[in-house]
Length: 564
Ligand SMILES: *[C@@H]1O[C@H](CO)[C@@H](O)[C@H](O)[C@H]1NC(C)=O
Ligand SMILES: *[C@@H]1O[C@H](CO)[C@@H](O)[C@H](O)[C@H]1NC(C)=O
Ligand SMILES: *[C@@H]1O[C@H](CO)[C@@H](O)[C@H](O)[C@H]1NC(C)=O
Ligand SMILES: *[C@@H]1O[C@H](CO)[C@@H](O)[C@H](O)[C@H]1NC(C)=O
Ligand SMILES: *[C@@H]1O[C@H](CO)[C@@H](O)[C@H](O)[C@H]1NC(C)=O
Ligand SMILES: *[C@@H]1O[C@H](CO)[C@@H](O)[C@H](O)[C@H]1NC(C)=O
Image (cartoon, rainbow, N blue to C red; front, side, top):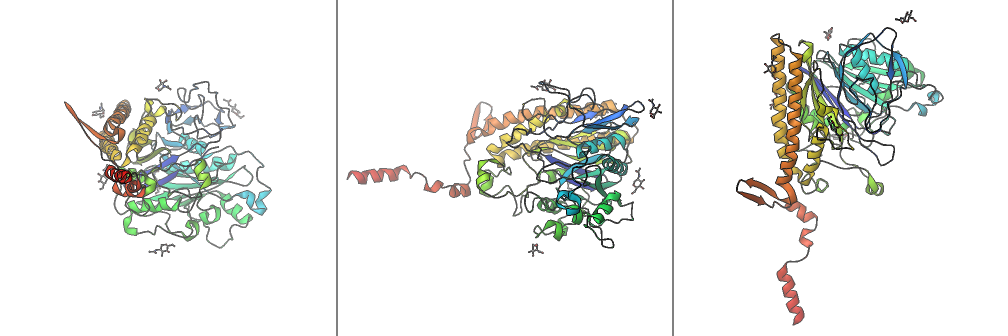
């Protein structure tokens, strides 16, 4: 079984940008694995006539795939792993494009980028006229597979959507079978157009229902585990693409009456899952940062029915990648919903809230769902610009592990090699080559004294993320002047990544020295200086410090009294 709580955010401005977080968590049942944050570069390939493309299962846990079908050096078996067995085959195309893939396809050599968000959807087995059809066929396509094939075969976002939709209709679609429902969303963009693509399986398992809405130019759309496409204009293919089944199945099973507006989410969504505000608070949070002038209401009665947030908004100003990093890292600081405040955040204001266990079995409740989540596998921001040479058309700012602890560094659409730091990401085995592990290690360490330590981490993030942005600017300028050197941009990206991973391990040691044992210790050359900042007063009061053992003098007085 897999559990994931991803969200996505799409935003074209002058340069088109978007991002996604994939978070997953292992449960205590034995069959669950945890997080596979590996990012691979699958090379372009030519294929003989009439060859087939194998389709594999799509677990998100490690290892999500084992074998050589995704590039000879990727996903090699280690530690006695067995090669994955194909679930089925589809006809291959003569040529597939190079792409970067993690759990989902991320970006291809043409600068087409994808972000993912799992969504609830209707359960066909609960619809009387459809229930008897459920389970007739074994669907072939999961969202992981579709996103990869889309990027293998397409040069634009529109084409990616059409290819994925057609494959799902032809071979059947299945979603992640978990509490969160079985619908899916991909945000697809190419630096020219952006689409929000929603999909779910049909009742039989042999086909699919999907819609894609174009994000208006200059707008940003936020998808956080809830379908956001509402009224579909059935006659405007420039703005809406969809499967014929979207209309016919809705009509056939009494979900829609012809002549009324076709409200995709209203018809096919099952609303927020997990708990109220699970999706809506993140939508509000992102819009609160990007378009504060809209002053959107953070509360509502029912997210699906009240529709408090639009499909997309125009941000208050032109956005850049740092704005999106900030959204990814948001725990609603400075709002009543901040995860950094109150007794639940502990003495040092951590935004991390662990889940599961015997306690939760005994006490019913929920935590506010922040955008930045401790168990995130990876998140990213993609910046594409259609007019640039293909090699620098798309820049992927990739961030393994939780957004608040990661460092988003650039990879380029023309890159010919993947950093070893991204090829290694196994939650069950520490590897100091791994960027995932460097960021995971430091973020966990930061829970010793989060409020202070996050400042040291933020300083490093600012430094190296600025370097990454500057590197892109330099390579883009060179490309615009006619100098495109893929070996050079590959080397530059790899070198920056390697340097930052080394820096993060150094940071782990520095943080340990500085914050060990509740001190703040500074090495001053010949001498050390250490201050004990202790706990904040509000926390001491709340945890019963004043009611602790009384002072020594009082004890004396009591003893004296007793002796007299
Ligand atoms: C591909 O399949 C078609 C139809 O079955 C056949 O006519 C053709 O010879 C095949 N081509 C090759 C190279 O095998
Ligand atoms: C860019 O998008 C427009 C629609 O907004 C479309 O007409 C055009 O063909 C696209 N250009 C490319 C290069 O994909
Ligand atoms: C925000 O929404 C809540 C819940 O629907 C409502 O009670 C409240 O009046 C709204 N606030 C504003 C300022 O509209
Ligand atoms: C993005 O914009 C903000 C606000 O204008 C600015 O503070 C920040 O430095 C910008 N970042 C980059 C990478 O340009
Ligand atoms: C760590 O990663 C490196 C580089 O990919 C690899 O050579 C090594 O075997 C890995 N170590 C472990 C313990 O997995
Ligand atoms: C290679 O990239 C660096 C930036 O990392 C740049 O300074 C240098 O001029 C580039 N060299 C070539 C040959 O493009």
